Image (cartoon, rainbow, N blue to C red; front, side, top):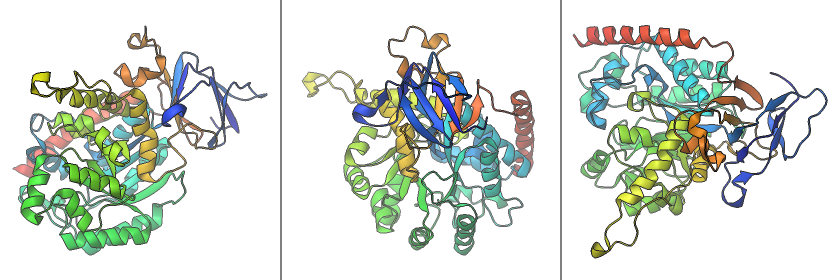
Length: 478
């Protein structure tokens, strides 16, 4: 659908992604003009103007996913890693299969992950791609940008990689061998020159993202990366403090906490965001907040791997920008933003409630239901993601902002009987039917369908690709 304006009419509820009194708008109508939101309120149709009927629908800003590993979309539910914690799981699943990927299976995995996100109402994806190695026969970065563009999504490539490996990788094949620092930096420069857009509503961005500060590079290389990224005008991203092993390793290797180590090597600041940040001390939370360093909160993966639950209220209170990420599908078999938002809402409450103690032990409260509201979770997953990525024109529903928005139908029994329909997509669980998803004013999905996509064919290709990966991984291990 390509027109000068579109009227979205008669929405049951609108959540804006804003904080405070502006977090809801009575609407009930919203007009998109070109790529931006022109107005929200009681609006009449213009002659010949296309209308999206949002009766019995709620409207949210399109989700902003700030941490993913799209290639893992063909590694869901691998029995070898299903019940393992992070470190053994890495060897059992993603590292075991990494060398089995070729250009065809990589592209298919990316497409599956992006389609899953689109159907959840996600308009912006930051993928932490670490599938790079010397002599790699295909350009995984180009494939990621191509697949995102084909679906009409905003895309941030977090260029991962390593110049050294963990011990657990030492006996694995060529696809796990580290790059040289010069090669890594040269490719980041190439990608930034070719793809990176500086506009606040950019469709393409690049970030520098060594896979993990503690293990992927020597300390002096981290500092070089930080300085190079800032010279290029791109952001920095990585994993940090996902489990207690990060605390153990940082103290054993560097006699510092993980956050303090990053600060010593110029890896803190408003242009940096880390995935996970589950295991933190009070001083680390203060340091992150004081520096404006952001978080990609990944509650489902953290739960699946048994890592714990990040203290998001404490981080946000300290000044840490909060966003949501789904992480890789190999540690999150429901890698979509609706599932992630639902988990974030529940798990913050569970975390707070777990701290409750009886009065005889000094307790002062019963439960944690005040730890996170639906409106908080929507803000984290939309405006928070935009802030972490530096995409200031997206993330909220306001006149003048980019027209990135998701319209959800309330036509499933899980939504029946709700006293507050606005909370349905987050609170009711399960993926609601997608009436439409707009990115930059363009309708990229409508009536739960993506134009030109053969969903059944994609599923069949995925089943065949899983068999191919299993066979190839077995041959490589023999």
